[in-house]
View 1 (cartoon, one colour):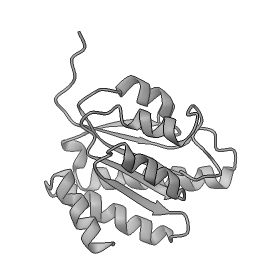
View 2 (tube, rainbow, N blue to C red):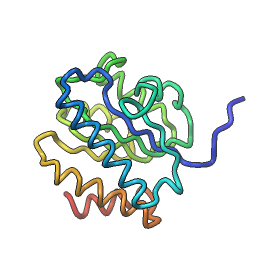
View 3 (cartoon, rainbow, N blue to C red):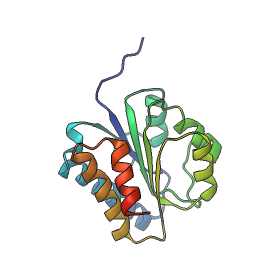
Length: 172
């Protein structure tokens, strides 16, 4: 019988099949920025971080498969997510939403670089409790401000739900 750690988990990942080096560099920088925020605000004192490409050794699909049904996964943060670069390993938006829906205690899905309204609707129909989605047209500074506000609230001991409320109030 599988047993799960008591420490809540954050999965940090991006699409694995990005061929454009400039886009890959931007996504890598964004993921590194998120990791820096997690460290700066001591979020990692309370959460375990699981990296899924390019910062980790496993792909996002591998990590979703390994951790599905794990009640410790509380937050999934994805960067570089656009209609033109669909995540490899998923058949379509419904397949992706179904796999995200396999996390029974997922409290939030954070998608940076989001451009698909139909994906958002599909995720909401899967009862994902909270979704933070930033668009590719928003400035990098704005995206950084949102991430900073969210992760600083978590670092101050706010529960995920309260951190999400703070982001919603400050960045409608």
